[in-house]
Length: 235
Image (cartoon, rainbow, N blue to C red; front, side, top):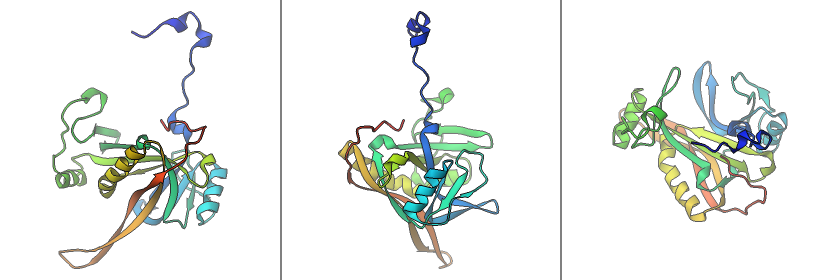
């Protein structure tokens, strides 16, 4: 049972904290929609609801002028930059969130950490996804298993005063690579500089010999960053 001390002094009761969602000034995106279908990009696209943030992103990373795009979110301005990678600051391992999610039409059907389910009603129950990495990918592709959801929270190294940005990805390659980044962040145990990049990977299909390519997001840790006095946890 919680303390009831605020019942006797309601004026002193702590006010609800501003939601984390409202602390985000923009999102980095590795794709966009073309005629309702997703398409990947080789340069970063940044969205924001703040005209000043969008203008500064364009100044820092080049590209077209900010323009409106159709979205249900608050980040209704987009900038197609000319930057393949940007220097960012991560506030330690807590700047990276990972989970596996099975999405349905009305939201998440199941969430897990790869071993146990994490949604309230099923928390602690064994994950229903296959055990092997490849089987997990196949199950997710067929719509029967959870897919990765990785979110990175950061500030821009060259403009930390703009506020916090985030990048979310369902990339299976990032699932592999992020392990190295998390280990490096744990060793630094504090703010760290990193590169957030888009890397083009070219390959040849075994069956047909056809040339193919895809873009994968990468997070490369550079080293420790100085701690700012006004730093606050991202969540």
